[in-house]
Length: 335
Image (tube, rainbow, N blue to C red):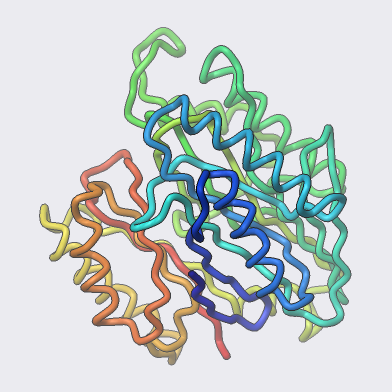
């Protein structure tokens, strides 16, 4: 099943798992559908959400997913992030990004077998890192290696953390605590401190551009989008184009301890954001609801679908570090 929404710089298509006798057959058939629906446009990024029931199942599905991505795309593997987060009514969901700029030149690159994508524009380039993760004995070591590897990709392209314009982090057991720096701290707190310590030339992104969520299973995973431009004065500069594709991230700020009230509150915040830009709900190209309790899926979907005409909505179950029952992430495009 497919939903589609377009932006000026990119198109994002949402695919839910299609029929098959096994996970492998379902995933293979879904990739075939993605290739068909892309209609020859370059596939540059895949965010894959697996609704695995336990750690063992996730690890098995992760191996199959990586194998099928390599077989299906060969030397043109998109930047891909694979995480354990349940989505509504699907064994898995794939968020597929296509490049829309005709004059862009796509490079599918690898460092130590890790695929990432470089999009060369008229006035610079963009880097899509894909999900960076390492299966190590400890969470802290996995975290360290992932941040170091992110820096390797940036260094290979002669840029640094300051060039990142969007970052997402998937933190397993986000609220779990262990000893770090002489005291007990949560996995999220450890991530925040290690990131600050390890990043040279750290970025100063606002909350809307750095998103950290919990995951059911697996290892710490980080993904970034970065860009570098040759000149900021050109009307066709990358920063000007990116401003037309506005990513948003909204939290309820613990205003209500009720998922329906929090959802309505967030829709009011989103409406204010659109009004500032002289836009309407029809300008929303992607909306992703990050819901804490899986039992709230239907309520949230019903409210969002009644408010947003596009009905292009992905609901994902994820833990977080505060009392927010729902957060909204998405993409607005000035068409």
